[in-house]
Image (cartoon, rainbow, N blue to C red; front, side):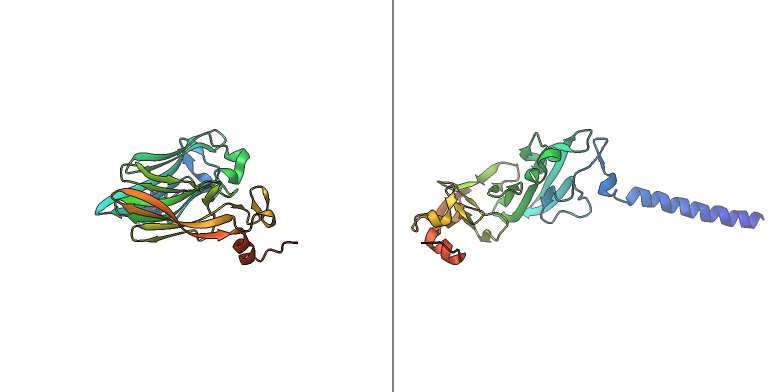
Length: 244
């Protein structure tokens, strides 16, 4: 009997130790995630960042690591200031604990996807990290950023040119080559409206889309337009039928 009790006790201890180890190492599912003592109710995709560190990522936090000219850089994106409803009111981003981005007065419950935040197209360029930020899903809301390791914003460009020329959203609109960023920008709304009218009403020579290059030299970016698309070319490329 004593031997049997010892075996049972031993098994119980092993199971208990296993449960303790499991509980201490398991990452909580987002459905049970608590931040600031509040149960989080942030939908998946509300904060969307390319290639987060998987071990620490959840619906309210993302970490990215870079090497910039031999120096380590950690960028953190996180929601904070949670309401009792489980929704945050603030989104911040820091690099090596230096804040470079802050979005306040969030109202995710009401605004839904219009409050989503998407960070994409990360690239180390010289002493800087370049990326794009898209605010919501309504379109025409993407900004091009470049920051240094202390959180200083070297480049912040949304209105690429006059007359509502902005970065295209959700397409292959950006590329990198050494010290040059090439972006694709547009004055079009949903590929059909131009200056609040149907594209067919536009002057055929009007420039409705264009490519721009940002060249980094001596710590500064200079921008120039490199290729243009007229209303006539846009209509032809998109195979839009216009009545005469």
